[in-house]
View 1 (cartoon, rainbow, N blue to C red):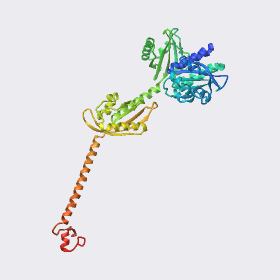
View 2 (cartoon, one colour):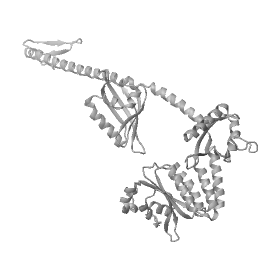
View 3 (spheres, rainbow, N blue to C red):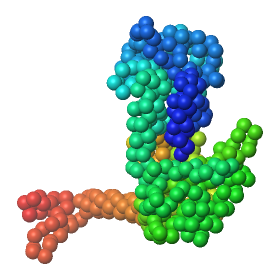
View 4 (cartoon, rainbow, N blue to C red):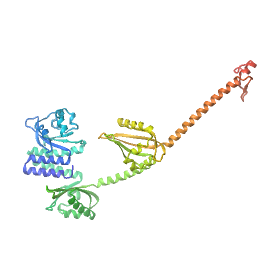
Length: 489
């Protein structure tokens, strides 16, 4: 969630404890959810005294009125709606396509009209683990299931439970403040707030620990913070504040402190304005990114080494994608693409058809068929074909690529294309030589047979003797005159 969400929750709780206006406080939380997830339609149900029934508590202003009527009484049922199941199992329930579930079959037209695709439903439990209600979030577009996002929503549930089940509100509030402190310590961060009118500054508890400051000597103020920054960070911070007041857009910058020269910090700040658009206060978060920065530098080095390796490989290393709409794209490749296709890396990534179109026509249908087969079966893609480059050179190419299906249904191949022209040339020359040798052997055999027939049918005795004195040739005429056969001689 954005950096100011937890601060906003604290303010909502503070307002509730001052006014005990449960409905207003819960609606503020729903507004916060729709702000973080713009494609969401959240609502809350409370456990009815007539258990097992859930009744409407509060809902987003954008919820459909007809659908809202259906929320007045919702059964707590293991085969019911998302909120009904979440209440029954006391676990979150994710329905990724509402049309597929029996509980929604009777309202398909309504679901289609109000364009809700999926739902996340969470049980709201008090400290004693008793069910006090449910929080449901409908999404109007496909929402990627993320444990991180879901846990962020679940972090809100204890706060909602405090408001709904307010008997032990003071103890629960204290617990959640401790929870905030734990989060900041764990994430090596702290939040701050600067009132533009009163010039008052608020730092969260972890600020002193993170920046290694003495609370007695460093009272929260703009001047205190400014003095501990390096000169470069002082200039950048002043420029960032000027920019955010002018544009009213959040900013992010790197900060370094005089007393912490070896550490890297990042600050993200945002501006809060009145209904009239007048700036009221600045809020922000500062996070120690020393470890992340070191890892990022190492990642860049590794990426550079990998790039050097791929650029020096005797082939085109590439990443190719076909999305769920059958749109093909070359995601990346090394510079060797030019050695094979006479097309630069930039040109190839911009238009992958510049590569496909070089494949000779007699191979193109087989190529597309092989790609589609690999896509469907997620098996190794292997293909060999001739290409004709822009300069007219004819080459043989051999490709191998390994497919991987993505969560959105697209498939990405990672592979290599080799120029096998010389290899195929040698292979072809060898084939020709073997054919010629076979032809010569056949001619030799035919000549031997013809010579044998000529000797055997000659009208004169013909015989041959080898070096050892053995007779190795003896025709019919010799046999006729001497009366001895070749075997006898």
